[in-house]
Image 1: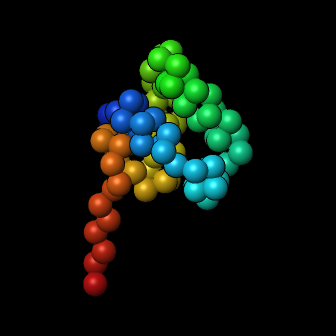
Image 2: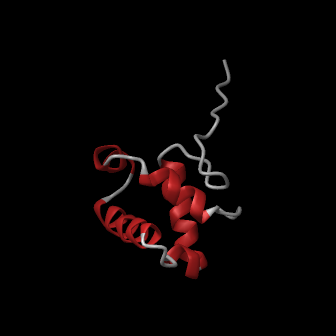
Image 3: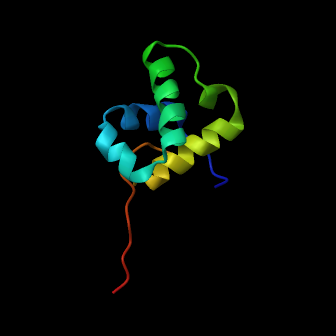
Length: 82
């Protein structure tokens, strides 16, 4: 993924998800890292995704895995060809 990731929008969107829902799209190690980012974000502290482009790209990948648009944090629109 090479497009821009809206870190704040992705973190805001994923913060409303339950652990059970996140577990369906993410591996255990990813959940730990996302949990740390969500805790920092809630505390108003810059997250790894704010500081490091690689972490922002990982967050964008996780958002996509959860069906979100990493650029907006909103539910992605899926085009289905008949």
